[in-house]
Length: 347
Ligand SMILES: [Zn+2]
Ligand SMILES: [Zn+2]
Image (cartoon, rainbow, N blue to C red; front, top):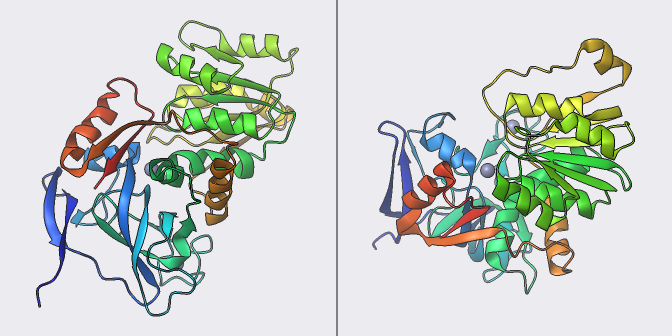
């Protein structure tokens, strides 16, 4: 019997290249599910793994950690799930060997699909059943897919980590593929003011369309001064920083009011430098909160918001590409040609 094969984009660490190749279809273990991938987003962290900024733990791997599709096969011990169900996948799993292992939130060394094991820039992907969330009828599969990172990460950062409450005043620094959703989520969570900050004119326009009340260019405007003007001198309750730029985080912190929280969602190897002096930081009870990931519950909540029409992601998928054009997609995201929100591959 010949092993069935599929097409997958393989990243090789040694030469830093990405190639589409014919590889065996992965086999699900007893508590895994095999999913036929119908859409998978291209994330900046994929770009960074390919350009070497982010370490790739494997010699060779199929990237892709923002997948949705249809269940093709289930392992012998998988409850509930059946072939034919449409699913979106939360791309984290527990390491399987630490003393707190069992669930991905408890695990000391959680792993990510597309980095620690083969991801979804392929026709099929294997994932533990605990990572699955059902996609409601009527929700486009591309929109479900991008929720797995580009929407769920800022959702969890703002609502859970930052604890944004109705009536609070919020700011979003960096209105790219995640930031535009941060603006929408801040509105949805009941912020009474949403300020967006981005040096790109197209990003500021997008922020205003997504529900920001004001959008500022940090290279042309005194942003802290504008924030004080808009808040009767009180400052913001919550800021979310998504660009990874140290200067943006420092500015976000300088716009905080009393008990203000700055959630750091964007990542970069730059050191954290806050321009604010420690007396002000302590006196105003400021916090800076690192943030990564989300729980499966957040993905479920996003599916409900989409199905109910409360959250509109119809403008978030900038292009859908075939697998053969994955390299062009990665390059387009790297150069930000046409300022895409999210590029999605359909293998
Ligand atoms: Zn990502
Ligand atoms: Zn573990």
